[in-house]
Length: 289
Image (cartoon, rainbow, N blue to C red; front, side, top):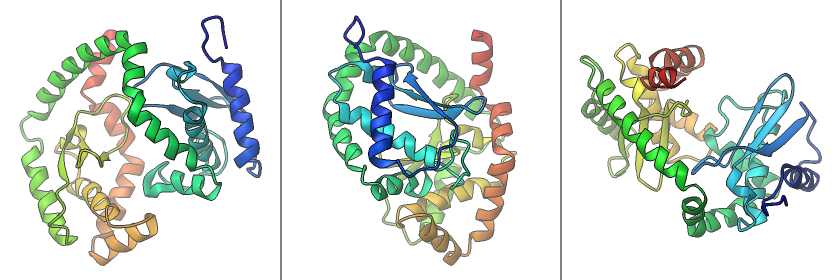
């Protein structure tokens, strides 16, 4: 603890070393790990990346407060270590095309007997996280509210660009594909995501809200239709499958694997550059800099 009663980076390092010894001692070492507390955040608990052949793990600064149970911190640490094993930020061979899709992190933690940390942590966060965040991050909440209102206005203007795909078109295609996958009773909705500059995925499923959100940049008419279709196809398959192999087989049985292959190639070779070039919030960020 430091003079303010908060956990320190050294505490975090020792916690990480303990979890490696307990659950990841068999892992081939890639880049050396440096871990520290990062910024406060509502939803992002940890991150992993590499710089100059060194692995960096950042942990939510709010976890430094002692009222956060140690097992809540541990749940994030074992999650980031799973990414390390899979080749993200570690310099090791990448084992998966995407860091989370197909439940690969959950499976890794189950295999290593450390999935119970997240089960317990999820319940604690459900009961206490919102209050802790409101208490220790009120200044962030106020600034975030102002920024979100500005960003919403920017996104609304962007999505009204003449010729862009509309949300009505998106819902229509979603309805058709639900029939293809025999999921007409599935009440999950679809809508555009007002993506932040940190949301790099093409789409996300929010299970508790019952909605799939497609990144708003995909409304741009220059995005091939098969890219939009694949994002919807993936989630419809994922909702009835367990793991990537089942998802792949389900898409193949629906006769849509050629669509998937083209879309995967597009997202692999084009998406990052396309997002960087067309994200409507980048101009706002450039002005602020």
